[in-house]
Image (cartoon, rainbow, N blue to C red):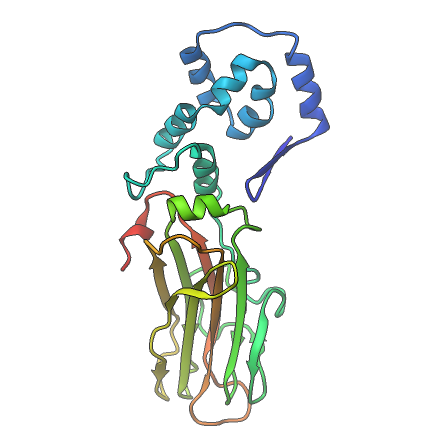
Length: 278
C-alpha cells in the first residue's frame, strides 16, 4: 500500500518486500518503452516502487520529461507557459492531482476546532443547522453570528501543507478563496471577509478585503458565495490568513446575524476555471 500525505509519499512494509523481490528481476528496456509502461502505472507506485528497482528505472521515474508528459496526459496544464516549474514537474503533478481545501473544519462539523475566535460579541458565535438548504448537500451545519461583531480566522502555513518556498516563489500558483454566507430572513445583517497573503514574518503582501455586505430585514435568506483568486502576487508568500464574520443590524438578543459555512482556500497549480476569475 502507498500513501501520499501533503506531498510526502510513503510505502508500507508489503510494498518494500515486493520491491526487494523485483530488484532481482531487472529487464533492460529502451527508455522510451520503459517510460510508456510507467505512464500506465499509478504515480505513487512509480515513485515508491519502480524507481527503487535499478538505476535505469530510477532515471526514468525521476526524469522531468516523464512527469511533464504525465501532466499533459491528465490535463494539468500550466496557467502561464512562461512560468515553467523547472526541475519540479513531479511536485507540480502531485500538487495538481491532490488539490484540496486548506481550511480546517469549514462546515462547523467539529464545533470551532481549527478556528481562532477574534470577536465574540453579543451572545457569541453559535453553530446551527442551515435555515435554507445549501447547494452542496454535504453542508449540514453553519456558524451563526449575534448582535455584536463576531469574527474568526485561520492562518494557513503553506510549507506545512506541502508547498515549498521555492515552488511558491518560482511558480506562484493561483490561490483561490471562497466563502458562503446567508442572512436570516427576519433580521438585517452584515457580512465581512478579509484574506491576506503573508510573508515568513506574517507581514501582509497582498489582501482581498471587499466592502461590508449588508442585508435588509425581510430577505429571502438564500446562500451567497464570495470568491476571489490571487494571481501574479510575487515571491515571498508563506502563509494565508482567512478572516470572516459579521453581526445583525437590529441588536436583537440571540443569533440573528449572518451565517457562514463552506469556507475554502485552495492552491491551484494547473490551469482551470480559477484562472479566469478577476
